[in-house]
Image 1 (tube, rainbow, N blue to C red):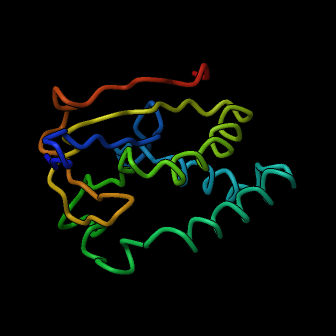
Image 2 (image 1 turned 45 degrees about the vertical axis):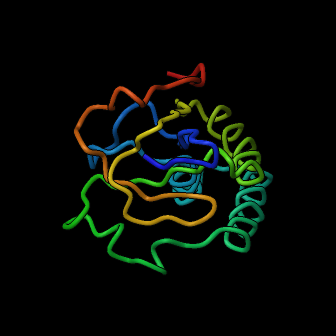
Length: 150
């Protein structure tokens, strides 16, 4: 667990599918919206939001896959996933439009907060990539909010 100044425990947040996909993993919000786009399911407005939003994140957020490709190597880290640091407020605020797209398409999602997302494989000022320590969420991990979609 990361400790912040003053001994506070770091909190991490992740927006993800409520159910595992075909790989057995719960896709994150960006993967879910990108999947809708690849299948041609987005409206022109949603596709434009996705294009602009993805460009914004590309400009403002480091790409762990480019800096440390092994973090997403499924042979080495089969369950690794990205988490925002709770302190990355600007990054988290930008997620709202992606969630609106998921809601419009009936894609169920949840917000998960954790003090221990797993073994940290990559870290920068805004995010971590972590491999869960166990197959089920740890005691420090809990869904806090879900979409009404099922």
